[in-house]
Length: 145
Image (cartoon, rainbow, N blue to C red; front, side, top):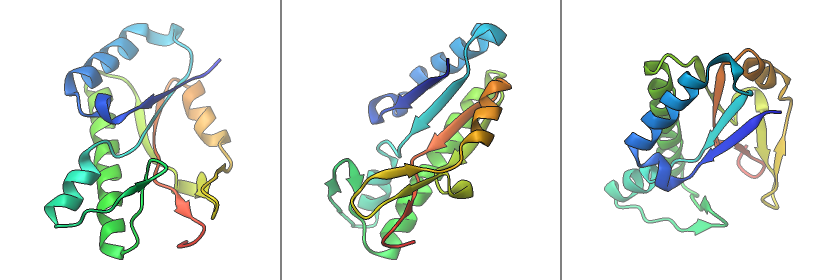
């Protein structure tokens, strides 16, 4: 059995939660089942966009960004969030690796909004070795490539 834990915006915004989660994973040791952490941008994307005077809407939980500068800010937020989670885990001596949905075409968003999963064997192997894959929801969009 593999656990997949989605970190929502509320928990991403709570550094004490992330530290507690990292300690729990570290204390569970080799007995714990493989674990994947999946996350969005939390509030970070919204703050970055608003700081630039941009106020895009969400559609189905996804930022409806159309301009390149908006996309760049959302991507930056996801990458920064991923690094923060990985750093918190490694500070607790939990082996972790940051992965994004665009890596090796792991995830792709279809025109209808459906997310298609690509080859995940390499991520599954990381988790089997007790490395925690920290997967951001940064995906390739069918419309924009």
